[in-house]
Image (cartoon, rainbow, N blue to C red; front, side):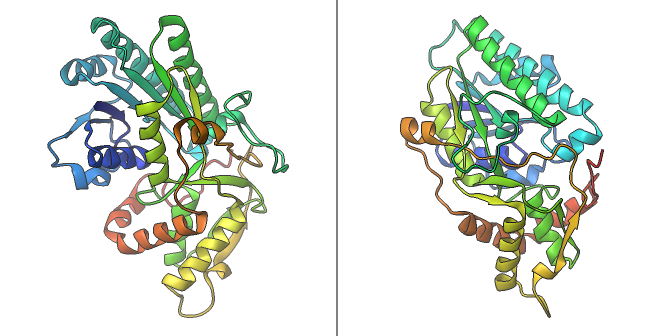
Length: 348
């Protein structure tokens, strides 16, 4: 199988690229190399004969048409997106242009290619999205997001992803384009760009800087190890039912404060401070505007239909992640100078 992966130099996309190559697929990595992309994320496969890189922006329709014509994929895995909520609060236009218009361009380029090739039955357009499109949950542990949960986005980021989800479904219903969709919970793991909570806490801790927690830290998320997510995505592209959506969760629900304390405990074990605990660095800061209280995924559909489950607990995944950052300073150190890294964004 030959697949186009958009955003393949990003955090989740690069995990998909690495696993896809390892599993024997041919991969065309389409990435604009914007601020959060790192071509080093796919260095381990860059010389593989089954790997090709295309420096293309999904907002460039003509370039996308050329990529489809040149590489003739069997499937598309569309991950390219602006993804940081805080940045979407400060500058929503990039999110509209990339996540909505970019997805429209991808759908039209894929539809053109699909029609020109007489609608091959095995072609798939896999759109990768987020659980944030569903809004916020109450604290009732019995209530979780399912594939039928109504959309209720609360931030410019989640609204742009909700719009892109609706476009994908419309192209399936109106034009018959064979699509599958997935909505995932919060990812973490190796190669995570240092603007999200987990890498920020790890790198701040190593620098003995404050560990910022929004509000009182009670906001709850379901945490998904990125390598598990990549495995789930490849499972869906191979065996998911056309027109179907699948929620992918880590089955690891915890509050932001609990998560940060767990990271501190792991750091205390793997890289102890000269005195005291990393928990001494925890600092509560003004909450993000419109901060959703809780996300939780019910992964029953992907478990029962496709037989997929996460492979690690939150503690196991975080320990692997911390160790990776300890071992890979040459990867994250240069990223400290990129725009916005280390600064508080999204205060409204």
